[in-house]
Length: 77
Image (cartoon, rainbow, N blue to C red; front, side, top):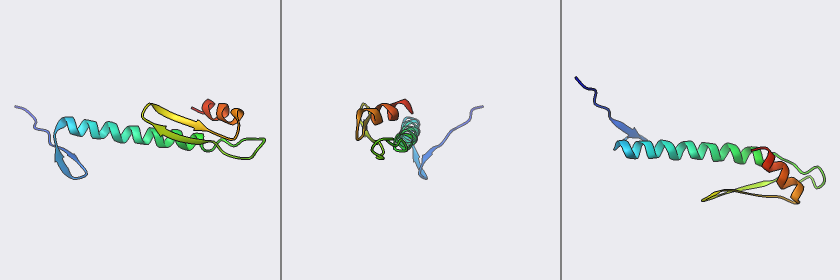
């Protein structure tokens, strides 16, 4: 007696490998969105500007009006 599993992404039947790869991609996207949200809420107390986060293949690049803002934004993650 066994259980047969059917894997679906967006309503389409897919292989187990494709299913888990899709789940991993979705979770990674959610994590990047949350990290970006946190970074972009950090405001420079001197210049009043916010930090900017850009996703790269190897992680995130954080930029801002000054080094202090970048350090503050990095500290949020």
